Length: 236
Image (cartoon, rainbow, N blue to C red; front, side, top):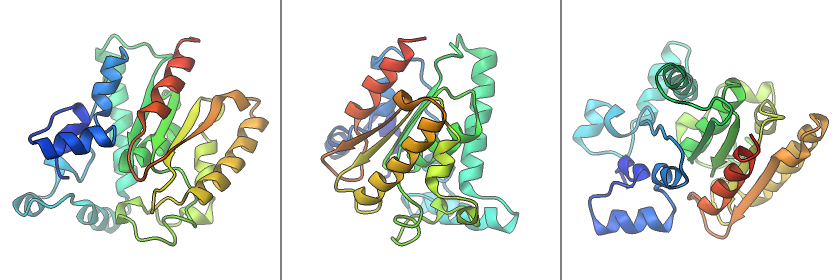
């Protein structure tokens, strides 16, 4: 499916609507229904931010082009996308009636990648709920074919994915994964989560970390996100 607008509940066919609803992909609309003010940006390399060549052939994304262009100048797509989130938060702080104690980030797949890295690097994000991403680098990206933009060169020489997620502690964090996700194996998810619990224990925040496992595959699971977000936001 190439329609990135379905994440805001906008579809152009019955097929898209079915795909959206079956995978809980209308994430921004779900957040609005929960009563939250929502920013739903287009991720670089998708939608209108694809290359002109990508748009011409209606490809799913232009992530590989973005990766190659970034590597030529010493950057990464993940870095670009996290930078975008921080600039959006700058804008929201200045222009919107924002409750700065309740800033959550959530998304699926590439959106899950951004949700984890952005929260690790920007402490203004008070809660992170990445979908279909949290795992181990070695057991997922390092051994299974993935989108090239998931790679951050040299990162594994510094630490595993759990070490990145650990930077979020003691802020609330929930990993949302599918039991049958073929590119983020659930055994590796459990392994990483056990390690993350230890980090949160050291941070004296064991109640702030959770894992939700849905029965399906690589998709979003709203049942994992909103009760967790609601719980922690109601405490502030």
